[in-house]
Image (cartoon, rainbow, N blue to C red):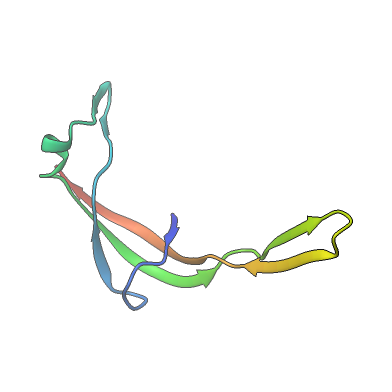
Length: 83
């Protein structure tokens, strides 16, 4: 699973908040119930996303602006869900 950058070294574990819990046919999205759920994940690697090119241009005024962006990402492996 790839997320926005999470602080930590490769090989360390982090706790993530649960947003939705699915157990067979039972789906839980209540925030009070999900506050007790702990999701643990292991950080695999830090990487950068693809280059996104942003170009702004206005006709007949000579205005051009070029900008680039690369997202800072982290790949994690979910190791446990304690409900």
